[in-house]
Image (cartoon, rainbow, N blue to C red):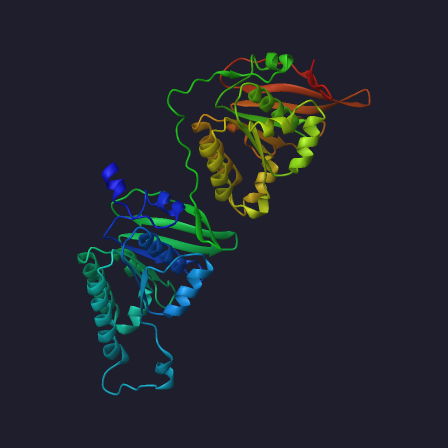
Length: 462
């Protein structure tokens, strides 16, 4: 397996390599399909530039754009094509200025032979290990019928394989020229999509390799194509021990029979202003005292407001940040897709050895969805964190301030290994706060409500 992985070719797009099981299999042919503006050419440029950076000989065969335009576009996205060869077979201005009329033979019959000859001669001369053809749809105009087109494409791809070349070729899927025949021919299929909710990439075929199925978010940026693989939950890391993590508030720990277990998911629910975020920070304060690193992803409050509010209730957030025991990230939900945010979280978990994560709040996270299903995305992210042994706190708002009790407004209570609820109680015309534990999968808990208060001395439970 290690030898097979070492033979893979990097696409130049880390997220795509991960989706494809570590990269592309050498000497195979991959179809990149999608409508105009979806990023097919950009993906091909990354593929060639990655090979050139690795010392390989790479070739761009262009049947549409000129070489100068290709190099200019690549430069705008920071893709280095200095060592990439380009065979420009796009129509020149002379074709329009000096229009030729073929009286005996069709244009396809006249033009196919010189184009084919140039490709063969260039490939044999350069011996490239990577070729990107943009786009193979143009071959349809050089063949009289579908049978001849299919035969020519198969022969072309076989020729390149015999030259020990890995091929990526783009295709324009349209009603006039569907690409169903190309999908059967290709060893791998990468589909790019531009929808109202964003850009997506899907791998539907990958011979000789496993791959991550489903839609993956992507972006076209000033640095080219970025792909964000969707998070796939995995089993909990072997050898994990569910040791108790106390809150540091003795009465609250009594409610929880010692605290919450490490590597579990805790829902902290309640109406706005009841103290959910402060309670989450209390667990992080206690984690910092043990030398463990925590992270907060805030979808609502600004970092400065959080700092000031926590300092006012005896939670030394700034000191924890200075000691690198706490990191707070302000997230603008409308700028992220669920997959982008999940990869953002994943980066910090894997790079900075974070032990405790709080998402504040699920209501703000919901704005990332852009039409995606909230529960499935939240499930995948939470279970991924849990699989890494991370203790997770999800802050969940409920709409009712007083009155009928409701755990969550989105039906996500099944996710919680622990559920701590906060609520307001109206007693003799005064609003007071109460705290209770509704669920604790891995242990017993106290079934009573206790009064909950926050003062300059910190959290008090009586």
